[in-house]
Image (cartoon, rainbow, N blue to C red; front, side, top):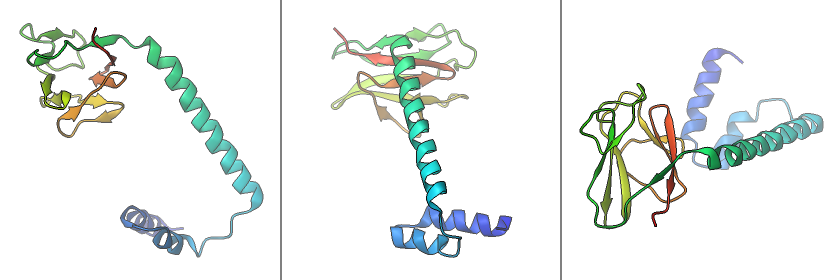
Length: 149
């Protein structure tokens, strides 16, 4: 398959809205053998298992971030002395993010940091709700949201 064909197909895959559209994109490829199907299934199962083990191993070891009970204002996170939650890691911006409470619970918003803010591995594109058990990352540092109380 040429590079141009590959790029065109990837673009069509990303735009596909049904299984039929996806099937049409690969109908000219050679049929999948049983051996290849079994090996692919085995590798997929093994990858999923190792991801679950890694997550289970890592999560209890993350430092806890306990959010205060209702009634608290916003919490500024960053390296600057004026922040409420000061992190000294150089991948954290001076004013990195803010945690605040609204009607639905605690929210986190990135304040234009260089290295981003993440919730459960996803970089924030806008304010996002956080709950106990969520992983929250500021630069290279990651914490787990602990229930208050």
